[in-house]
Image (cartoon, rainbow, N blue to C red; front, side, top):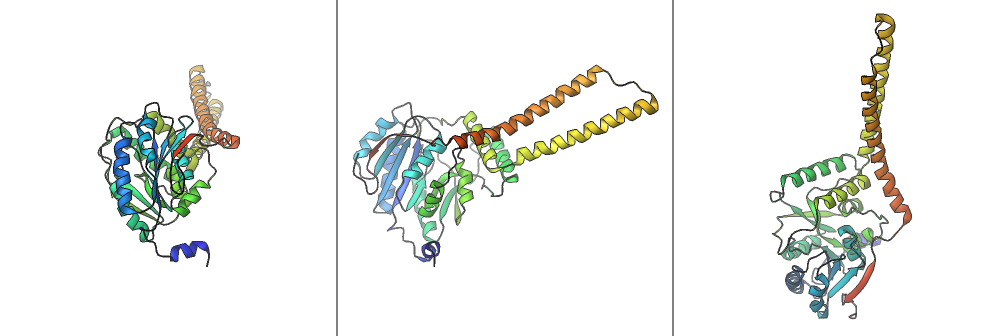
Length: 329
């Protein structure tokens, strides 16, 4: 019997498991004290051994200062990245440094209720390797964001061999086997929602409605959302390349047919060849199509260039506090 089968056969007791909660934070000074108060109380009630790993993603406010009083508490740890690398990189840093048997990913703004960790633990005890919180609906979001989200999942799943569940974000509990699989993936351009699906393992979903932000406004702008969506599409789908290949074939066939029509019409009917206006308009249109096609191809080539350079996904500037099996730094 291999290790995988042994792990599945052993009973899972939430009381004996160790939990790491990874919390990426960017300019969340107003939310972190309240989050740590609620989260540490919840973890104490669930398991005897736990840690909270706050990943400060180059915050420009006093996020590190807000966490500092909590670093004397055993189990609270602060990773400060050397600059702002983005949420995907901050989550990756937390996953790499988490030491628990189970790892919970959640946001710092209290929209992910810590109380749901208990239900996630029960689902894990029942055999799930990954337990995801899935939004019941998006009625609280602007219509433009809802439309963009709907369109994104349709596009990425149309060309992906691995379906990415819609409305399941980063709020989830993962078994150590899932965490190790994610940490072993070499991508620099990381789209974690796709990677969660790619690694597989038994997954269960728990529906929820996000709470209101405790303080402040989200720093995740539409521009960042669009960049993340572009990373997702280029990482998990070849559909754009296939669409433009098909469009190129249709345009070529149309141009060939039109050329034959002009030649036949000239020799049979004696019609003059159409003038310069049609020719110039056609050249401009097809030049635009070519440039757009090159731009889409360039996105994929650019991703390859980033991967070949093999720069690290993140850099840790400071590591403070005491997590599981650690002395305070």
